[in-house]
Amino acid sequence: MAIPKILLYYVFTPLADPEAVRLWQRGLCEALGLRGRILISKDGINGTVGGDLPAVKRYVRTTREYPAFRDIDFKWSEGTGLDEAGLSLDFPRLVVKVREEIVSFGAPGELTVTGAGVQGGGTRLDPAALHELVAERGDDLIFFDGRNSFEAEIGRFRGAVVPDVATTRDFAAELDSGRYDHLKDRPVVTYCTGGIRCEVLSSLMKDRGFGEVYQLDGGIVRYGEAYGNSGLWDGSLYVFDQRMSVDFAGDTAVLGRCACCAAATNQMMNCREPSCREQLVVCRDCTATAPACPAHS
Image 1 (cartoon, rainbow, N blue to C red):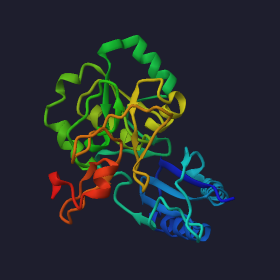
Image 2 (image 1 turned 90 degrees about the vertical axis):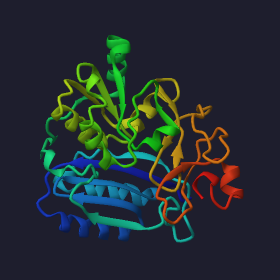
Image 3 (image 1 turned 135 degrees about the vertical axis):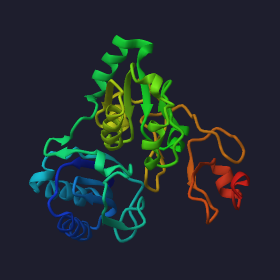
Image 4 (image 1 turned 90 degrees about the horizontal axis):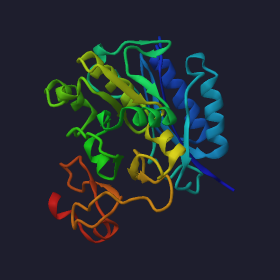
């Protein structure tokens, strides 16, 4: 019986020949019948791929054989399904590219990466350590969302600061705007989906004078695995594949409101207008019946 699985992973590590890594990774995925998106740069690799369980397991084993990737933290989740050819339904194709950054903050010159990872970033907290810090610092502690603002519409940490950014590239300017200078003397915990954006964001914050910066190690994914709906996270997690969102347990709180009718929903869709690149919260009824959301037509 075919079992669809999805991997989310990254590692910051110096790569002498990103193009050679790209060719190897593309060939490996094609041979195993995996789809997804992999970005490679001189600073490491960032990917999410899906396929049948045996193929995904082999991908993990083979990728870890490369010394620079030996310690990659692969995060597993359930896929939606496989097509008749055994390819993941959660990704339309395989994309493997070399980019200047493996996560696009538009600030490659600000990042220092060694074999030990990103230098000068926030203190790492696993989910249990996060709870200890919350118990110790109480209301003085700030959760700072390191994702695009639309992602927080369907799920976020309770009481979190959600910057008004449409893309990751907006963060540097947002921090430079002075809007968050009042937080520079308070403990700030950055969080994101799997941890990669917080690696960079926490470093940018430290460079800009934020004194006590933490990052949630493993991101929301690892936190959700540990605590489900019983911790400090509310709602669903937006994901960058055809699933669009996932829940960590049953009876998840529904935070999103449909952009068309304002009904409660955790469903996401791409804006249907050709000129619009937004992701919208849209309920199933409006997705099925509306040719385009009235607010974006």
